[in-house]
Image 1 (tube, rainbow, N blue to C red):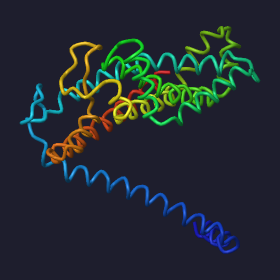
Image 2 (spheres, rainbow, N blue to C red; image 1 turned 90 degrees about the vertical axis):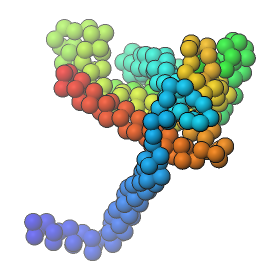
Image 3 (cartoon, rainbow, N blue to C red; image 1 turned 180 degrees about the vertical axis):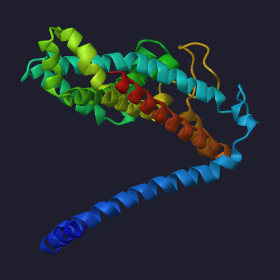
Length: 285
């Protein structure tokens, strides 16, 4: 240990720039951790004391400003968006990684398009969803219009994440499967895909986080009606829109902080469940 410490000190004094970089990295990490802890503490301290049973009533009214209808609508929107997006994103990534020929111009166009779509502001997706789904297809302000808009918005994210996860799998896995007589399709779905499931779920988690926290795209497509949608063609607000409305009105600031606590807990729960599922699937493969 002493020899290793001496070597480290000699390297630091010989290259002072490395010491500077190390200090910058440590300070950046501590700053990021501190910002995260401050944000969590601020939301919990201001919101946890105002969590009360009336916030979880099934019906919203001016006296309880219940978040339960928004919570149920959020779960519905997440479910519909993932049902549409995950198969499209994963199968597109499988084609790009496993079946498309190297140097294919179509593949390069698809990747550039996906990266471009990832950088488009959400308000633009909201305007597109309003013009196409709400007006042109005549779905009106509805859960379905909002879900389809969010599906288009998170599709590039899931596709690119799944593609990177598939590319990270060593070719030796594929070669061993081929050597045992397995075909291309069986190799992809029985060997490659299970090995990449952790990376794919990471993209799904990021997509869920973006869906749960989205407001701009949903205001123009799903609407802000504070009730549980009885069908996919009914309007309804999500938790993020509910939080935005409460904070912007200024009459229910305490309830807005309480809603933020619930929203934070939901995101943490989704991340924990997804991580546990990824570990279980990884052991099973």
